[in-house]
Amino acid sequence: MSGDSKTAEDGSFRESGLADLINKERHGTGRAVYLPFRNRDIALKASLGLLLALAMAFIALPVLALFLRSPLPSVAEALHDPVVLDALRLSLMTSSITTLAVVIMGTPIAYVSARFSYPGKELADSLIDLPVIMPPAVAGIALLMAFGRMGLAGHYLSSFGISIAFTTLAVILAQVFVSSPFYIRQARTSFEDVDIALENAARTLGASRARTFFYVTLPVAMNGLLSGAIMAFARSLGEFGATIMFAGNFQGRTQTMPLAIYTAMQGDLDVALCISIILVAFSFAVIVLVKVLTRRVFKRC
Amino acid sequence: MLEIDIEKSLRDFDLHLCLDVKQGQTMMLVGDNGCGKTTLLNLIAGLDRPDRGRITLDGRSLFDSDLGIDLPPEARGVGYVFQSYALFPHMSVYDNVAFGLRARKMPAKDIDRKVKRHLEEAGLWEVRRAKAADVSGGQKQRVALARALIIEPKLLLLDEPLSALDVRRQAAMRAELRETIRACGVPCIIVTHDLRDVVSLGDNACLLERGRVAMRGRAEDVASWGADQQESAETNDLS
Image (tube, rainbow over all chains, first blue to last red; front, side):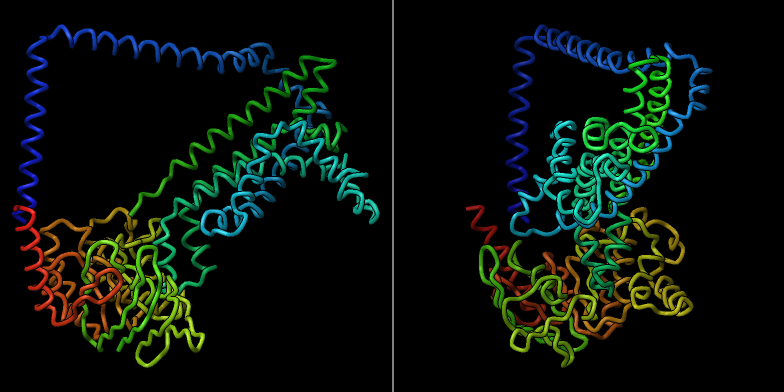
C-alpha cells in the first residue's frame, strides 16, 4: 500500500509541476494568447455549421422539389393506375421475399462469421461484402452470365426446363444479390457485440447451443438484426440496375417501382413523379421505423 | 469431491495443474493477471478444452482425454459466477434466475416455487420484475449467485465475485457470500486478487504462477505469505 501512495504522490507532484508550468506560460504572455484561440474556435464552429447547412440543403432540396412539382391529388390518382399498382404490388412482394430470404440465410452466416474462425474466412468475408462495391449493372450482367439461359448454371437448369432470367424469381435473385451484404454486415457486428460471457453463462446453466442462440444471443442482438433487415428491405425496394439487366422490364412480372419510374420518364413525367413520391414516402417510413425500433437499446450489465 | 489433473498449452506458457477440492471446502485461487486462473475455471466448466488429462467430480468423469470423455458445459452441473456477472440484459431478475430451470424443462409450477424461494432468500423478491441491467451492483452479484445456485450445482466456480463492488459493499457481501457457499456444501473454487478474500472466504488456497501451482496450503498461510511478498516487493520499489 505504501508503495502505491508513494507513486501516487510522485504522480501528483509531477502533475502539479506541469500545472505550474502552464500557469507560468499563461501569466507570462497574458490573455493575448487566449483570445485568438477563442476567435479561432468561433470560426471553426461557424464553418462547420455552414458545412452542415449546405449538406442538409443538398439532400433536402431535391426531395422538396419532388413534392412541389407533383400536387398530392395527382399522387392519389396515380394510385389507381394499373401500371403503378402492379409495380407497387410487385416491389413490395419481391422486397419482402428478398428480406425474408436474406434474413434466413444471412443470420447463420453472420453468426459463424462473428464467432468462429475457419480456413478461408477472410476470403469468404470479402466475397460477402463484394456486392456492396460492385456496380448494380455489373451485378445484373454477372447474374445473367451465371443464371441466364446460356449461363454457367442456367445452362444446366434450362435442360431441366427451369428458366430464371426475365422472371419474377430473377427480380428476387437480383435483389438478394445486392442487398444481402447490408444485412450480413450489420448482423455480424451485432453478434460480435454480444458478450461471449452471456453465451458461456447460458451454457453452464444447462442450455444447449441452440437454446443459447435463440434465448440469449438472438434477443440481445435483435436491434442490430432488425435495422440490418430494414436496410436490406430498403435496398431491395430501390434496386434498379441489376434488375433491369437480369430480369428485364415487363409490367406485372418484373417491373418494380424504380423500373416503372424509368419507363414513365420516357412518356409522362407526372406519372414518374407520382411513383417517385410514393417510393420516397416508403423510404422515409423505413428510416423512421429503424430509428424507432433501434431506440430500445439494452443497457449492458 | 473435485479432482483435476490437466495440461493445456496457452500462448505464453503451458498450464499444468493437479488439484483437488473436497466436499464443502472452498479453495481460493490467487495469482498475477494472466497466470491462468480464469482459464482453469473455464476448463473445469467445459467452456474451454484441456489438451490432456482428467477432471472428475464426485467420481463422475467430466473430462478424460484417455477415455475420450468431454461433457459439454450444459451437462456438467457446474454453477459458475462470472466476473462480469454475465446477467442476461434483456431478461428480468426473475427470468435470469429461472433460466437454468427452464432449460431443464421443469414444470412451470415448480419453477415458480423454487425461484420465489431463492429470490426471497437473496432479498431480491422486490426487484424481481426489474431488468437485470437496472439493479444495483450488489443486487447483480446476488442475482448471478442465485442463478448459479438454483440449478443445484455439484460444484461452484466464482471468478472475482466481489471485484465489481465498491469497497464498502465488498465487506458486507463477503460475509453474506461465505454463508451462502457454506450452506450449499459443495466444492467451491473462488478466483480472487484480494488477500482479504482469501482468509475470510477460503478453507485452503492455491497460488498460481504461469500455469503451475507455486504454493498450496491453508488459506491463512497462503494469505500471510502473499502479504509478506507484497511487503517485500514494496520495499524493493521504495529502494
